[in-house]
Length: 292
Ligand SMILES: O=P(O)(O)OC[C@H]1O[C@H](O)[C@H](O)[C@@H](O)[C@@H]1O
Image 1 (cartoon, helix red, strand yellow):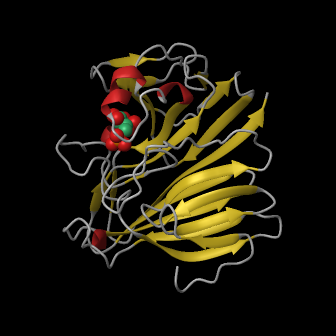
Image 2 (spheres, rainbow, N blue to C red):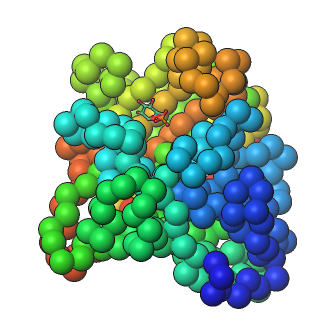
């Protein structure tokens, strides 16, 4: 950040943590160095925030942020062994460095962050040099995020995800369409199923689809459809903690669960990736909001 000049429309902020504030004719937004975390993206046409943020979130070097778009890398949840720490990997806890910042004439902000390869002090482990990990971000009337992983001298084997929290009117009244007929694993029971019709919510939900199809959140209450289009992802994870889990999470309000849903594009479990030395993989999502 110290080496990159910020054009009009971008400014440096220190609160709630150090990051880049975006304010252009197309959108407002906020991306923090901590985890290259997109905390806010609101297109100028939207009357409600698109991304959900917990008012109880921590903003600390050693804690993940609850809301926005946490980057999951290099393992998902507790990983394939079920014992990895920290949960969802160190990507969301790592300091990332701004490598370039541009704003187009039309007002789209293009930012590139790289996971800081020099600072491994945070977690006391020297894992970063295995790969170069970048987030390429375009924030305008749509939000486009690409996680770009390039193996260095050795073969790497990893999981990843863009763990997006969306604001919804009431999770009990939304439906997610686009995934009809797709197979999924219920992470709460370990059982396999196949979705029939639209996905709706009437209990705690934590499921992982094996799919390359694109989900849409149909939200009559907020009169909008949010589309999540991905490239290079073989999973979609859908999560809502419902009543009891919300109470158990200190960084999540007890009554916040109806107003959010996570729809996460990922390569996890059987979708995990292997890259040969020098090989690169890109996983992208494009988020679009349309009024209904
Ligand atoms: O609390 P976190 O580590 O941020 O994880 C929040 C959630 O993320 C994903 O959706 C997982 O599938 C869930 O099992 C997990 O509870």
